[in-house]
Amino acid sequence: MANPPPVSAHEMRKAAGNATAALRVLANPDRLLLLCHLAHGEQCVSDLEAALDIRQPTLSQQLGVLRRKGLVATSKKGKYVYYSVADAASLELIRTLYQLYCSVPAKKKRR
Image 1 (cartoon, rainbow, N blue to C red):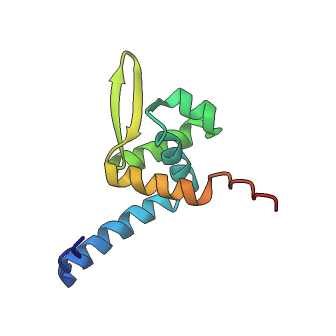
Image 2 (image 1 turned 45 degrees about the vertical axis):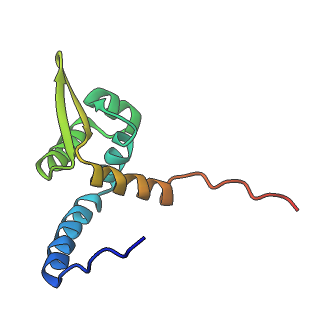
């Protein structure tokens, strides 16, 4: 497989800015927890509140930040608003963080 063409310094700087912005949003524990939970599928606010033990005012505030930053999408079904991770890059980042920090390590084999 051939190596991809080199990325220009300008393109790399722009990408670094985008990555830094995403990481700033993820630096809040409640927002990271929300995104990790949403990586498993869309959820409504009441389900998120029950599952994550985040009080409704904080939950709404953090979901608002995630929505404004483009990390979550919303859809309305009846009287409920459902949230989901907005794009593939964000989802991949969350899944990687989940795998690195939240997965239960496999038991070591006995000799």
